[in-house]
Amino acid sequence: MSSDSQAFDPYRSPVQPEVPYVGPPTTGRPGWLTTLCVLCIVLGALGLFNSLIGAAGAIGGPFIQKAFQPKAGKGMPDDMQKAQEQFQTEINAVQNKYFWATMPALAFRFVAALLLLIGGIRTLSLMEPGRQLLLIACSIAIVFELMFSILQSIISLDTMTIVNEYVVKMTETMPQNANGPDMSRILPTVVRASVIVSMVLAYLISLAKIGLYIFGLVYLRKPQIIALFTNSPSATPALNPES
Image (cartoon, rainbow, N blue to C red; front, top):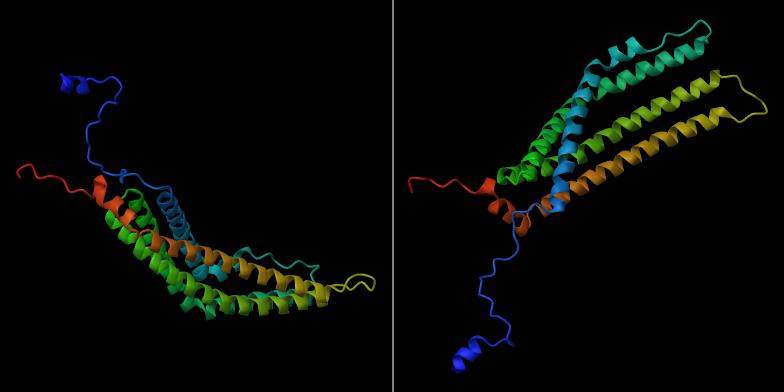
């Protein structure tokens, strides 16, 4: 009698069946992983586009500039026309000087961008080979960003020297106003500041990319992230019906 009253005691909460704790599901894709993959895909696509455009510019740049360069008018002074022609010649000389360094860099960028694109897409699908490929892509991209920043710095310094000389020659041919500002001093300063600002922005963008790739190298190696690819349906081998 006492056992029946304990079994059906209305003042006791019902006993829940014991179920083994399996923890939270590990098949969902975290937001940070999605963000990393999307950014790598976008950077990979942009890198491929920039590689092709850069190669076309490095190979056919002088011909394109010559074809689209506006012809000097009859009213243009001879000094200004000579300064413009000399500026274009020196710019082409700088491009030819670093041609054999620029082309391998563009090929390096193409490879890194392609790996980022493919690795990002496959990692987004929770494929273990994609995660490993994205790790390789981030490592290669870091090396590329460092080397390309150094190369661009050297080219920019040579270009800035040519641009400063061109601006000085152009201001010398301009009519001077005694009551106005001294353009021979203002214009070179403005141009020099513009080049420096563009270089700083390029460095900041490169640092941001390197930071993203370092984050990817660390994040993709976390145990909980590796478990996603181990437990994902794409990583589970199909069962053999004969077994």
